[in-house]
Image (cartoon, rainbow, N blue to C red):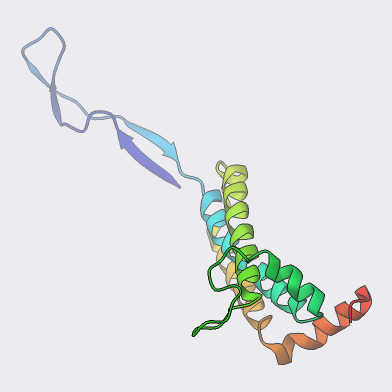
Length: 157
């Protein structure tokens, strides 16, 4: 993508040392626009959603893993305690981990890809596919057999 910038947007200007107006065709300067920052800005939330999904399934496996995930979000008001609104529990840790991954990945990928040019036409289906995959990963009847199988391989369940 290219965006044109003009040094002299006026159709006429005064020549230096002259009182005559001279018509000038402003010569455009081309500034390269890269799609890397766009891809970084759209991939980062997908990585955050994926982290939220994984931390959610990990916290469901054992009480110890649930407490570990919860410990990341103890700073959030309502993470512990019992009031009229109750406690949001380990969701505070899941939320914190997702926000950390989202923010760090966005900054990192933006920095790495700020001068990269990716095909947006190819990226959009990949983005939508990843978004759909992560969304399906939140549905327990679909993902639980896979999560339990992976947990048994890791010796957790």
